[in-house]
Image 1 (spheres, helix red, strand yellow):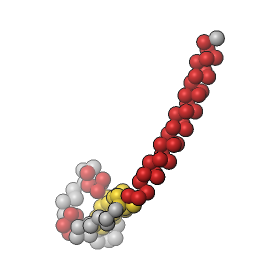
Image 2: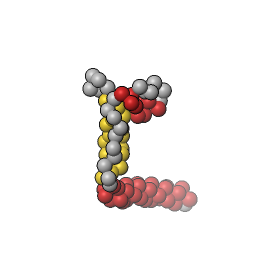
Image 3: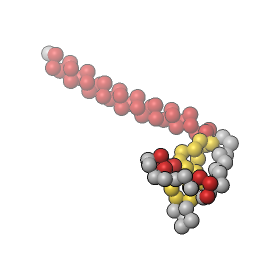
Length: 85
């Protein structure tokens, strides 16, 4: 059974459901586990994130990174100015 991605969604994680109910992520298959039988025999699962939340999430991440960079820059200039005197 193939996973059908909902419209307007971003797949965060996915894989296959085994007969015992456990999930095997695609990353495990890429890491060397033999997953050839999973693709046609077992149902697929996926965690999705709405695309509409992607831009606001990127804005928050950018703001946090800019704040951390600003604080690091402030302390760097402060330390350089103190040692230059």
